[in-house]
Picture 1 (cartoon, helix red, strand yellow):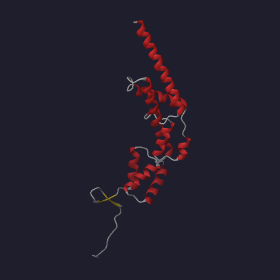
Picture 2: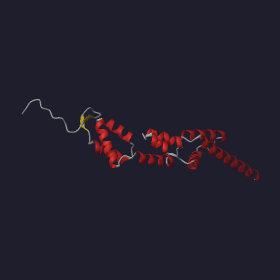
Picture 3: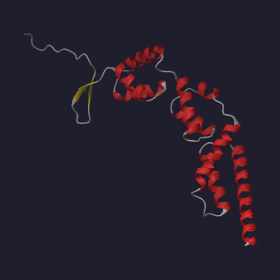
Length: 186
C-alpha cells in the first residue's frame, strides 16, 4: 500500500444544496433528458448544462454531437415556438419575435419568420373576444383603451390594432343602436 495516492473520480463532481459532493450525471444523457422534456434551442441547452456545472469544452462537444445526430435543430424549435405563440399565446408578430429571442433562437432564423396580416387579424379578434367578457360593464371608450393596450402588449402592430379596434367599435355601436331600437318598440 502506498501512501498519498489519490485517484481522480471518473465523473465530474458538484456540490448539492446541502454542501455534499455528488457526481454529475453523464452530460449526454442529461442533455437528452432535457431535450425529451421539450424542444430546446442550442442556447437554452448550453445554459442548462452550464448551470449544472459541466465543463464548457464538454458542453460544446456534446452539443455538436447532438446537432449532428439531429436532436438539436434551432429551425424546428423556432417553428414549434411560432406555432405555440400564434395558437396558444395569441401573440402578434413583434411579440413572437421577442419570445423567440428570449428562447435563444438565432437572429437569422427570426428574420425569416413571417406572419400574414390576415392571420394576425384573426388572432387579434380571438383575443378581443376572450377579453370582452371581462369588460362588459365598462363604457365603450374604456373597453377600447384596454383592448388597445392588451393588443399592444401582445406584440401586434399599429395597423392591425387600429383595424381590429375600428371593427370592434363599429360592432359595439351597431349593437347599441339595435338595442335602443328594441327598447323603443316596447
